[in-house]
Image 1 (cartoon, protein in one colour):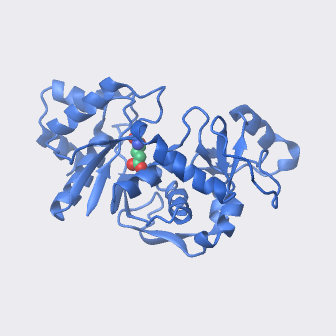
Image 2 (cartoon, rainbow, N blue to C red):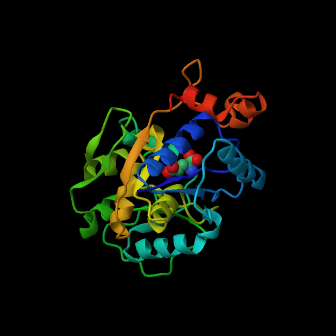
Image 3 (cartoon, helix red, strand yellow):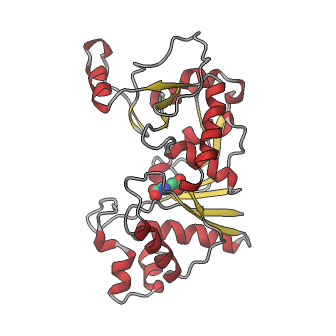
Length: 290
Ligand code: GLU
């Protein structure tokens, strides 16, 4: 069993991160497997070296040990470009220059009628920049524009043949567990043409996470339930790229006393704050019920 913890160095780790990390660590250790770390720093505007340093400090303090070297997504741009090239050559990506505002306006146009569906990345894209169904893509992949996945076209690929699904050993927000399947309709209506390369990053969370989980040989992905809906996108990308699908374990979200989800800005729940207040790693495990 190979598990991972994949934090973004954009703020201090809080109790929710500790829960995720400890769970992944303990699962791997109990099975005699390996626990890996990956720093998800593709968002260069928000990632900071001091947050990365604090991640290592907090995890060490929690008593976790991980394999080295640690993978850092900022070192992996070539691997993401190669994956994007592959999907581009399959004719499944198209450039899109729409702003959030353009999308909101298109969705509020009278002919759209029904309320737009909200997918894992927000309102389902109305398809403004999507090329006509039979248009051939010949030119080289643009690297200075956002690229969207043509979801309907991707689902016609032999690689995306049903059944689409994954094994869940935790649970989704609706209690989904065991063998979780989803349909082409779930993806076209509920997810739509997601961005796989952001203009400012040259990649995206979805693309990078799939490429890296495969590169690190992750067999069990342990993460918060808030990412359950994104897993359908990840499974589809694994199929398109010929990568195997790991087992997923989506865990409960750690909430504050008022029942609100913890956010990076909740400094009171930061592991560093607990540390400075004299708590022990054992206290953290106890608070988390681990
Ligand atoms: N980097 C993501 C985060 O900090 C986690 C990604 C994942 O576990 O798939 O929320």
